[in-house]
Image (cartoon, rainbow, N blue to C red; front, side, top):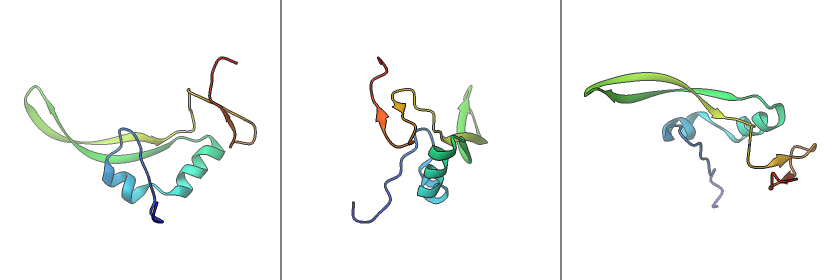
Amino acid sequence: MDGEDYKKCKGVKKNVVKKRITHEDSLNCWFTNKEQMRTMNIIRSRFHNIFTETVNKASLSADDDKRVVMEDKISTIGDRTL
């Protein structure tokens, strides 16, 4: 991938992912099982009124309900029907 980081976080603004989340953050999240939160500013509309909000959202989480992580924290079993 041309030596460039490939980072995606569902539901987190692109500039927050680009500037405030590192590879070390994701490794710490996986190996310590601690969720990481990030603050972002968003523009919302409710009942035709536009306003800005500051939202604190979970950006990284080690909880994955689609696969089972083994004891070594690296190997996985992709099927939940064990």
